[in-house]
Length: 180
Image 1 (cartoon, helix red, strand yellow):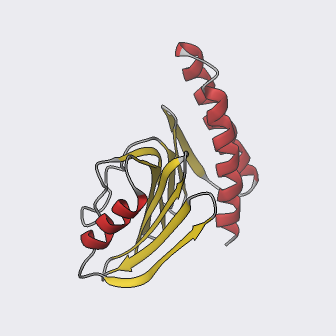
Image 2 (cartoon, rainbow, N blue to C red; image 1 turned 45 degrees about the vertical axis):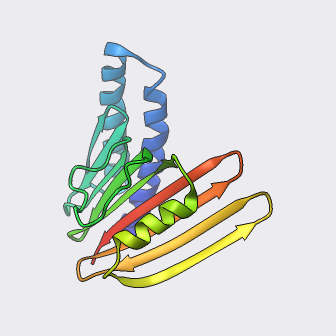
Image 3 (cartoon, rainbow, N blue to C red; image 1 turned 120 degrees about the vertical axis):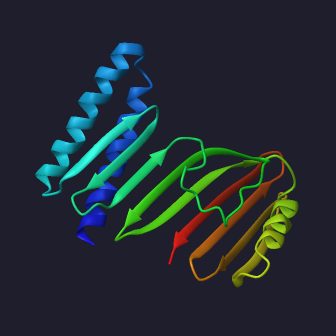
């Protein structure tokens, strides 16, 4: 667990560093990203961790000596996203990430949905027919706020979905897939 705590501290540092990168442009940005990569790797070494950091166009990739990986940032579906888990075409991805620990992968996307939250919830319920339903819950609050929680699993994956809608603020989505 110490490794996880150290990685969490590193992630916070990395995210802050990536924000600084956006201040720079062109060649200056490339130099800044290399400096930040080395600074993070040095900070990890002082904590007894060996990590390889690679910052690419707003995405941060960290690999430790055990081969565990953490990728954060980006606004695209991770290239090895499980094909068994659909992503609705009307979801605009704002953030994606992947973490591999002890050979098991976890993927996350979050973004906004162009449509009604209940329609998206029904889309996923239909998409996962035949999977084991672990959680199916919804709530409503004053001000037009609605939230749907849905979790399913099969022999390979656990899929968790959170859909939130608030009047005049739109629909937000978090979709997470974890290997068993």
